[in-house]
Structure formats: structure tokens, C-alpha cells
Image 1 (cartoon, rainbow, N blue to C red):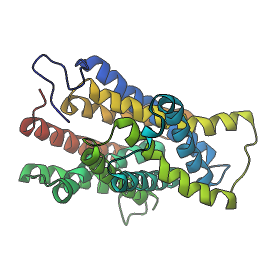
Image 2: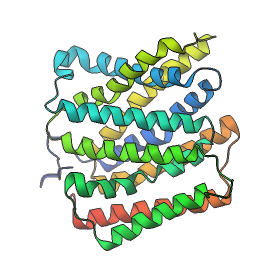
Image 3: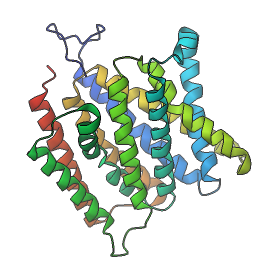
Image 4: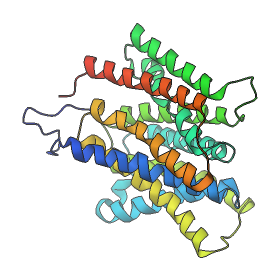
Length: 303
């Protein structure tokens, strides 16, 4: 992310406004994503999983085309690095497939906590892909974060469902997606990247959909299917807007507020509440992630 200029305005003339940045981030991760995941979990109890995931990406594309299509036209799909964009799109599809399948078997708060290992994976992947240097302290934080994940999953004890491992797959895919997004952000417009975010998932799931589809039983289910894509697209938009109003070192920690939304929604809708060991693992993961963000702020101050 580029730094604000001396007059406090980042490139493009957008004012720095930390309050608005925090609000956007919290709206995305605390409201949009937990509600979207809850809708997916509910729908997967009655409908095929591929159909639910297809609705997520189809709705995302529809929202992007309606908002940016009239103004950008075909420029919306013109990418200077189409291979990277398609790779990003494939990765976010993989992340969504793993996460939604996991949600079918484990609670929403637990999945959210394990997903917090994503920033730790970003540190690892940034070395070979972005050529970044990682010191001993950040390696220690990464190791501690994965210890937190082990505390939650408790492998070999038969406590956690095997699907919890799929969330680690989600974390890996989403981390690589973030690294590639950073790599391509200097060449392609944000709306182009956001359009490609839903493209591969829509195309692949459209090919699978005819073999395993069930028409919605009610208007409420139709609304839930529509809500998947709308909430996903708006949530990602809010997160992007959040970083326009403040430096990543300030805005990023509020991503952990997703645990609050996931816990409230999970308990309200499904009666799920994390046990004490899960909270312990969450504390370790969050502390590790916050330390990495702190080290980033020290070495790469953003104004």
C-alpha cells in the first residue's frame, strides 16, 4: 500500500479518515461476512453445496456488473495481467469451496478463528513471491500462530471434526490470493480485480451446477441465495474502501472483529459457542497476527 502524501491525502486525492476506515472494515468483517456465512450454512442443510457456492459467485458478478459495468464497459474485464487475475480468481474459489464445506460440519465461530491463520501464511508466501525479508521475531510469531491453530483443532484427540483442516486450506488459498492481489494492484484497477474475483468460481460452478441442482422451495430461500452474492460483493467492497481511508497497520487489526460477528450470528442462529480451549487458541492466533502487523508498521511505516 502506498503512503499518504505530506498533506495527509493518499494518492488519488482521498482524505485519510481513520474513523471511516474502521467503520468500513467493521461493516465488512463483522456484519457482511458472518451473515453471508450463516446463510450459506443454512442453505447447505437443504441444497447441494455446489449450488450454494455458485450462488455466491454469481451474485458477486451481478453486483459488480451492475455497479461498474455502465461506467467502465468492457474496460471492466481488460486486465494487464490476466494470468495473475485468473489465478487469484481460482484461489478465491478454492478458499470458498473449502470454507463452505467446513461450515457444513463445524461451527461458524470455530471456522472464523482457524481462518485467522491467513495473515501468518501471507508472511510465509511473501518471501518467495514478493521477495520480502522476514526476521526471526516474525518467524516466531508465525510459529506461535500455528500453535494456536493446533490448540483449536487438537489433532488426534477426536475433539474437532476433520473438516476443520479444510479451513487451513482456506487460509492458504486466501493468503496466496492476497499476495497475488498485492502483486497486481499496481497494474489493474480495483474494480477489474474485484470482477475477476468472482469469475472463475462462477464459470467452474456453472459447469457443475446442471448435474446437482434443486430449485428453491420458497421466496425466503431465493432471498437467501441472492444475499450470498450481494453480501460477499459488498463485504469485499467495504474492506477495499477501508484501506482507502487509513494505513494497513491501523485498519488490519479490525479484521479480527469478524470473530465477534461470527460468534453472535453463530450463537443466535445455530446455538454454537466456542469452548474455553478454542478461545485460548484464538487468543494465541490473534496475538501472533497483531504482533506481525506491529512489526510491519515498525519496518514499513505508512505515514
